[in-house]
Image (cartoon, rainbow, N blue to C red; front, side):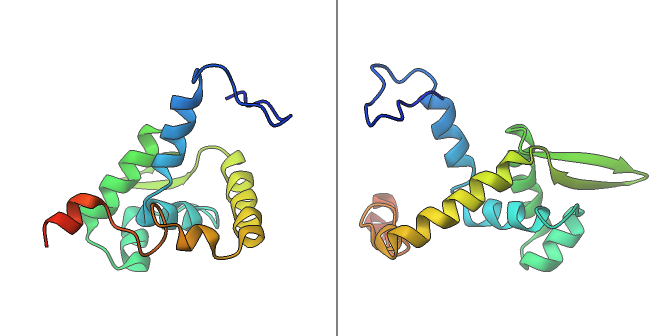
Length: 127
């Protein structure tokens, strides 16, 4: 993704779809929790289930999503698979995100579209 660092915007969205997909893959709380856990070392799905308190099928689906995005890789050992981060650059991205969040204060959390209290319109209509 090439974004003009001089403050300009690219003339086209070439490459931005991939960037949007990357950020979308990390936008789910469970997937982000898995990535943060794997930043500390490899883990099996059973380990993630115990730590996150979620169903095995849920954790497996999120790990599969991260694996499909090449953010997580599996190392088979016997009948078990140990998962780890596939790209160490992901840790740099998360560290940069933490710096950015600290700099913006509560602005992101209070954002009416994406903040912690916002909900998709479909959820609000279902009530």
